[in-house]
Length: 120
Image: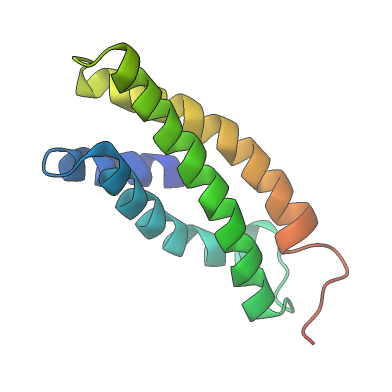
């Protein structure tokens, strides 16, 4: 799991103690995403001349998919096993996050920071 995934889970765990899974997941994903999107733009994809507004709109769409997948995964776990431990939740989140990380990376490369996109 990438370092942003570790940050995500480290934010999720304490929030989960005081909030339901969808709320903890939303806050943890949002905070991790804030750090991740600019790092990806500048370091991973090295595309500094991307129109920021469009980049953030497209990133928000990927964020929505990421939230839906990870929240859905943990809610299914809890529906099937209502007494699931936090460890089971984290393992489920790691698996869902890993799957979405691959999809998000492809989306960032081809769509969000797409080659040939430049500042309008």
